[in-house]
Image (cartoon, one colour):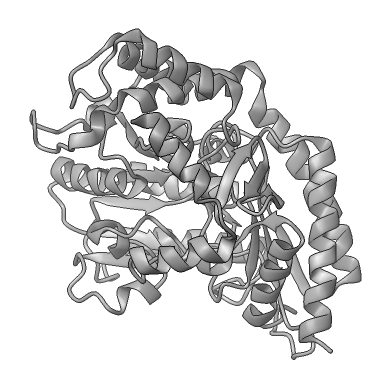
Length: 458
């Protein structure tokens, strides 16, 4: 039966348009990536993707950061082969196995202090599921009801996770989201929310947060938790300045507010350290992990300080929290990240790309700013023909950003956009990308940029 199914799939190999048309017949209107990256994938390996027409693409999307080791990495495939022949169950709810034991030990060892003060909570299979668990736990432990989140933050599309997500676009059609969420301004290197900029802007934002929590006339009771990303991904690759993040940690700790750091996209080596919060030298109370932690398979986990483990048995469950194969591929990923020192490699290659992009910026003023850490990079696309603001920042140009993404696709480069208007080009290549491939990324990006400028700025 399996051979018959494979033979049938092989016999159906048509062009991209054929599969995209059928996808439109089969799937809901909610699908998004095929509208920007119109291909049907036939195979993939490492940093390369091949469509059904035989065209190859350099993948700088990597499953929105999920594929830290790229597509079908030998260590991942070997872990799947071993698992399939081991007799271990695919699914165990929260019953333990030798596989889960080994994965848990390894994951804990990567947390601050080698995990001595932490324990793990396995959640549903997505990052949003883990965010929901973190919010519930914070409310359970503190007995408080409100949450502070930040402008530009992205934490998922489920009810609570969407409530603490900054972008109002997906919220507008959903009535009565979770109450008690207060948003505060997040530092932005190019567009300071206070209109100050530089070190003064960062200091002012830290002071504002402190006053908001500590001023008895602020009008807001102490929250259960503060949730944030140390590097905002979907929000446009905005990095939390270390001094600001340390200030947030000091204030939350002083007032018994749980600090939840969402490492779903930035975690596991992408920013040059195992976790993005490590750049500030802090210890969160709850760490939200997903994407790369499962080695390409669905898995989400909380790392939480033991002192805040206020759950009663069964108080938060999830059927697929026992995905044993994802723990096998996750263990292989974590081992490979460490053994090959891929966080350090991400830092080096990311610095090389960032330097080349900054040089490109000097020749193309539509590249308003290049920012990010490691292999999590953002390029703010602007309309330099317009008048700049008081900080000499130009208005965003989402139309040009869309054109750049389209021409990157045409030139064999897969990437995504983000930011307030979708005007930030984002690079999230797998951490195993090599020097030659990085050079090819730059070559294809500049070709696409020239094509897009010719189209939009003729």
